[in-house]
Length: 233
Image (cartoon, rainbow, N blue to C red):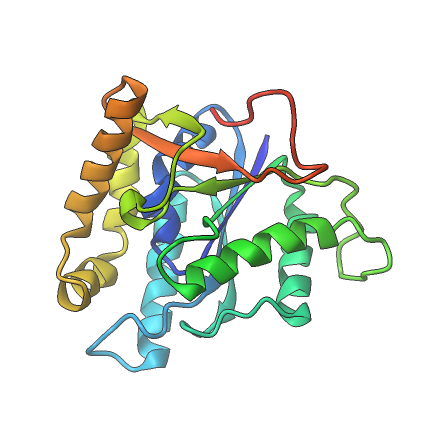
């Protein structure tokens, strides 16, 4: 399978669905990890240009852990749009990667960047099937199913499906560890230990699913996106 994961900022995918992406990669899937924003507000020390460059290197290193392809729409933090320009950018990536499944943010996650990135992924998945919307790559004649990953801290999110990531939790942790600047930033800005939070959430979802570590998801229930088979590993 081809899996396209669309997150808001560098490190969001690792925190919220990194174990599942690692498990998909282990079964032989081709993974594309996309960030809508470049992370240029994630520092109290560096300039926007400096931290954006740092975060791109961190994101590329994290993707390399599971041999995933990394791409970025390169919007500034706090400015992710759901306009036609952004849609066309993501449509090109969808057509190029030809996903069997799109994973993205929940529509009720805690900040607008997350919600907009999720909305962008959902609408671009439809746009990619429209022949008269021209991009460099040819039209992708598939209305791809979309799954929402967990919200930060699990608030307002009730999983419909779980993925057992017990054997891949260490890989998920390695991917997150590549984001050194954000481990420090989240400690400074949000007063959280993101490694600890990630483990707590994986254990909590694991308790719900009867395994040691798990991640939770919900399929987007829209006509044309629902399939009568399991897509998650």
